[in-house]
Image (cartoon, rainbow, N blue to C red):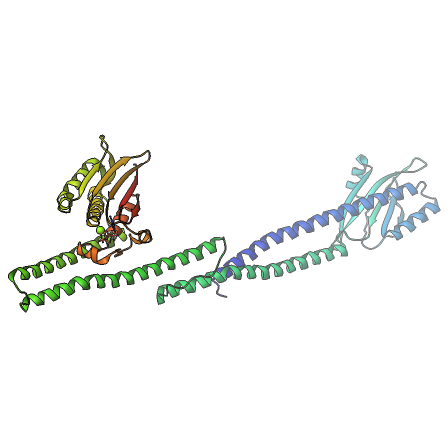
Amino acid sequence: MKLNSVVFKIGTTILFLQLIILIPLGFIILQLILNYSVNETESQLVQLSEKYASQVHELDDPESIQLLEHLTEMTETSAVIIGEDGETIIQTNLNDNIAAPFLTNELSQRLQQDDTVVREYNEGGTTYLKVAQRLTLSNGEQATLIVFSTFGLIGESFHNIVVLVMLASLGAVVLATGFTFFISKKLGSPLVEMEKVAKQIAEKKNFSLRVNYEAKDEIGSLANAINHLSDTLERYQTNRNEFFSNITHELKTPLTYVKGYASAVRHEMYQSEEEKNEFLDIIENEADHISNLLDDMMDLSKIEEGKIDLNKEDINLNLLSEEMIRRTQMRASQKGLELNLDVPKSPIYLYCDKSRMEQIFTNLIENAVRYTEKGEISLAVQELSNTIQISIADTGIGIEQEDIPYLFERFYRVDKSRSRAHGGTGLGLSIVKNLVELHDGSIEVQSEVNVGTTIVLTFPKK
Ligand SMILES: Nc1ncnc2c1ncn2[C@@H]1O[C@H](COP(=O)(O)OP(=O)(O)O)[C@@H](O)[C@H]1O
Ligand SMILES: [Mg+2]
């Protein structure tokens, strides 16, 4: 495992946290046990000393002295009784650890105030306890009883506990380490996989690769983001390939015409001067078509790459519609079509880019004229509560329902030859949809074959 890997970092962090929690915790637990055992020993010793005191009434009564000796042996304690003059009168079960003077000045002063005094004392590196207590004998004399514990405060059992706590901590650390690295590995392995996939995508351009990890956590979202990225790249690649083959195809047809008719003119394959001019017209038209195609393509690629800046201002849609109708008038009347404009009296303003809005109108009205043989074309603008709606309706050939979803795809034409014959490139609706969406609007197509088509644009009000 590399030292700078995420797994290692997570692992060591958790381990470090464990240690800084375990060490103080262990210390606190030991301290608590120690306090408890000191208190316990203390109260036991005080109880014992009270018991002894209740046995001793006369210092020269051999029976009670014997009893005291017996008791101290049994309970592993020692006792001394000191008379009023400070002389030791009785001592039982003493050992080397208990050194004189038993009754220090401090202790006897303390006993003036309290009946019982507990003291710790050190001997040979071990801490012991002693309890001093005042005695009143049956003859009225005063004496002091001191009981010593002969076992250290930190006894064997305490050492055992320390060892136990340490072993338990060590076990916990080992267990937690294993668990931590298991978890870290589980978290780290999808990251490693993602790195591999991302590298493959970047270096080998293998956009069909996906990360196989599903979870609702951050790593899961990262995996989703990578998959989303390769989805987009894959779509982009497919689109680009399709686009190139479409362009090639779209350019080939007019170029074939241009070449064919140019050669016909060169070899004087026309019957009359009139036919020669027809050939030249075709060459001119096809050249126009190529030029239109290139313009549309440039436009579309700029729009799709987000490279156009919209020059938005408040545009009077009533005026714009009138202007659009005027521009189409000639072409419409050539086909015998009626043009209607339906706008309210008060002007409707839309915050938009004027030339782009003109482009939208031109494309849609041109389509309506192109795909309508008789009847009328109506342009209507209306203001709703939150939106502005523009609709362009014709009484033309209509579109099959199954074609409608594809109309906005590049180069999609329901009837290729008809579209071509009228100078269509198949890019118009793609451009329109992109421009409408750039204005936060939406586009909807309603159509019935041989009845007509209505295109509705909806824009939010500013
Ligand atoms: N008003 C309409 N009536 C019938 N068909 C239409 C209409 N507008 C568009 N279409 C169909 O949608 C296709 C795509 O339109 P568009 O992208 O503008 O390309 P074109 O260059 O052919 O006009 C057209 O080829 C035509 O088949
Ligand atoms: Mg068109």
